[in-house]
Length: 304
Picture 1 (cartoon, rainbow, N blue to C red):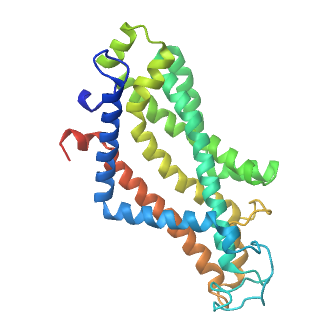
Picture 2 (tube, one colour; picture 1 turned 180 degrees about the vertical axis):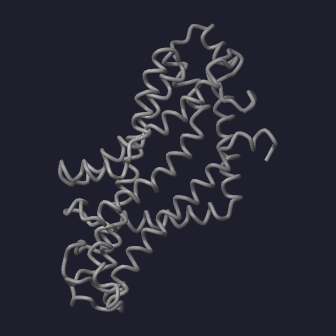
Picture 3 (cartoon, rainbow, N blue to C red; picture 1 turned 120 degrees about the vertical axis):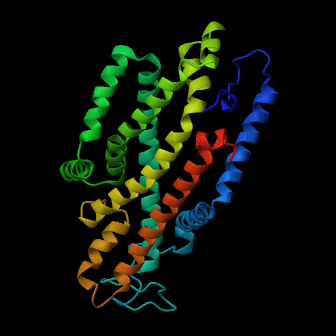
């Protein structure tokens, strides 16, 4: 990463607020242009946006709710039930809409929680170093070596399954990778000239961390966080598939669990929830790949 690409608002007196804002706008537009040049990433963004819109408007599209029985059991896909019905007569299209909504909520909220913890731990460890760094990294290593799926399964089984508990467990289990990634970025950036200049002008440690280093270290964290959304969605679906998800929320995993014994006689009961889960994670993966290409500082150095 070259220093010319580092956004250093407020560090040097000659840099005005307006020029710094213009530089940020140019950088955003340049990154967006790189992203749109990746056709797969753009396809993933459109796919993900479409699924998010359907999930958000699920109560309007299917006002009856996911647990309402509105037809005969195991009815084939048709004009009345686009995706057919399940073993007790519930509309599968409605279930997929609400299940996608649940998956997105769990994925986004758990990753936001992981980002909040990981950014604080990684920034403090990387900026201060020494004993603080050693202590925080030992704690981080403990969380990294934990078997995430089995620990999540154990915690949910012991303390009960509810959607907020699942979000908390997934968030707690996913912050360590983000912390180590941000720590590495802080170790690289903390001795750069613009940080030294900020210290010389009397900036506080918190201001240096938040205003100077973090904006230049956040790009790989954004990419890692977007990938973790897909991982969190799959973990929530796995818990639902094993029957330990929240029974009060429709889940794609629980729909697959209920459809196991009807695969041979009613293919639609498993096909559409499984397809929705695949498309959701595929869209997130393609967007993450596009973000990695557009935010990769090495591409900036070679002028791509």
